[in-house]
Image 1 (tube, rainbow, N blue to C red):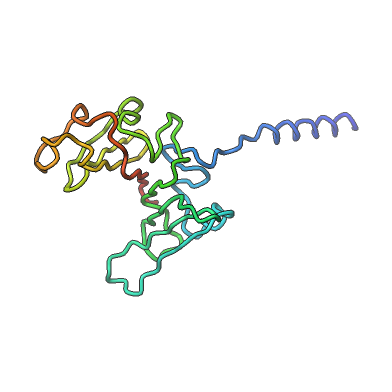
Image 2: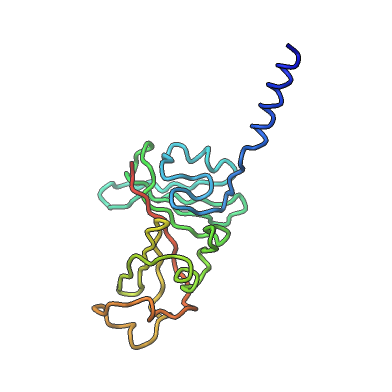
Length: 186
C-alpha cells in the first residue's frame, strides 16, 4: 500500500513538473502570451492580473467607437490595445490586438520594432494594400497585419494609390509602424 501511495505521489510530482510555462510575450496565431482568441472581455482582469487595464466607455453609443481596452504595465508602459468584437459586451471576444511593446515577439523574432525584412524573410505575405498614408501587409499564417508608413517607400511609389505594390518594391529596412493580430470573434 505504501508503495502504491509513493508511486502515485511520484507520478503526480512528475506530471506537475512537466507543466509548460507560457511565455507572456510570445505571439502565435491564436494567442499572445496568456491572452487567447477565445478570451472574453470579462476575463481580462484575470489574464492581466499584474497589469493595469484602461477601458474606454463612450457616453454616446452613436459615435461608432469600438471601446478599445488598453493594457499597461504597473510602471505605465503600454503593452497592448484590445478591440472587442462587440462594444459594451463583457462576453465578447477580441477582434483585434494592437501589439505596442517590442518585447512581444513571434517564434521567428517578429515584433513591433522589426523591419519589413523580418516579415519578408520569415513569413508568406498574403496581401499588400495600398492606403492613403500607409501600406498594409497581411500575413495569414499568424493572423496578423502590419502598417508601414509610405514615407519609408521610394518616392516613385508613395503617391499613386492605384499602384499595386509588390513586396520587392518595399525596402528591407522599412520600419513597421503598427502590428495587429486579428481574430474572428466567436
